[in-house]
Length: 338
Image (cartoon, rainbow, N blue to C red):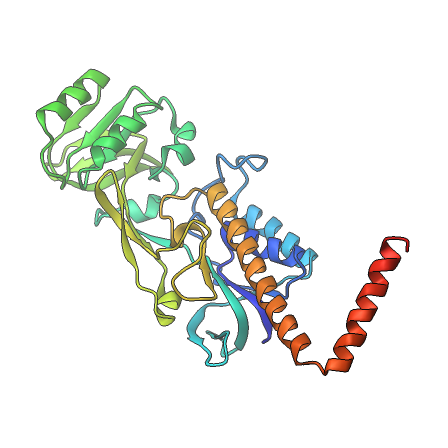
């Protein structure tokens, strides 16, 4: 095989896994399409030791660390993955390159599917946001809107209330709320606005309001949106893995590739880490998952190498085996000072 491990995806999960494997003296290649989910964000947050680091800067640091230990980085998109009869995998990259690997770590992440409201995509990652833990501090104490597209909007509005006293929940396309939920909103001072949202008002380069179908504009400086989260699973589907729904608070938030806590999938030799399997994982959690999966991949390779070494030893001629045993005993005697 060209490589012991190929990592598909070069975000926090992929680079952390590659770094772990390179330090374990594995031949490792990272193939990265260069399209990270958090590219529009100004900084990575709640990442201890790297708080506020621009996403591109964090990845550049990670690449340098991986290559510093002998790992390789290649830009490109894997367009086809195949399992080989003799074991291992063959990958075809969009530039026509073909590489083989004994094991795969897939960290291709996810795609955020935004509601069809004019202007959301242009402001995504700036002042159209999804995670208060990632962005709440930066918009604290400002008027924040929450765009309701489903039942999880209730949880979202109550959560964002932690960062500001001025929260407006736009019911938009969500079903009507219960009396108990309206009571919660009233108790927390959350305004509820009926009617469909049709667009955003932007002044200069800042969101200033949310426009309703009635023509009325409600002032706000940030808009929280619950996107549908879809794992980038094409390569994994080539290998026989199927996406499954992931639920939060009893509601489906998107699709993921199932795996065990260490990232092992149902296909032997294939591990996953990060948002491709855990949709609500933050950057630091994705990095930790990449390390966890990489350690299990290394152990899996050690197990296979040991098995093969034992088989080779058993195939050795009897005399040669006795000579080897004698050499082993002599070495053991030396170590014990005998």
